[in-house]
Length: 192
Image (tube, rainbow, N blue to C red):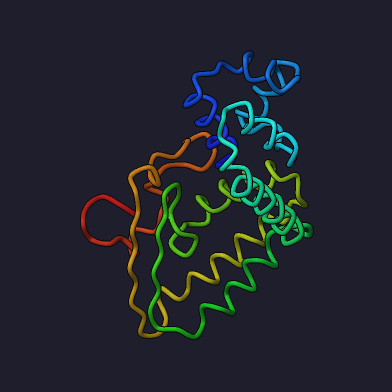
């Protein structure tokens, strides 16, 4: 989506409409729309044509690199989750058992280690459905809950930076912010 947003910005900066851009690139008008909305990932040739049409040739190398990086990240994400989500959560559990300090920044959800089982179930079900990966949500939630023991065991310190959007979740998918573990609240108000 970042590449799409940048391409869309170039189009707007050039004062072009999607239809005008498509005409300059020799495409059907729906192609420029699909690329601009992040529905269709652009090929290297698409990025070159888009930038040339917008008079922004200097952006070509960076946009191609960003597009390839996004594609690689997607492939890696799919490989990690090909067998479901449980394994990923178990691997994360091993990595957090040692250090005594944790920091987390979240923009769209409560951190996994302070989520209740209900919140985690809704979130992981939505992710599983979106990714079309094997449904091992119950096992993944158990692994995530096991990982959250770090809140109760040992001598740990936590620093959380949560944006308000992390609590403005869709109740139909995974409940409300009140579903976050209250004992893990930062103490600054009615938060997670």
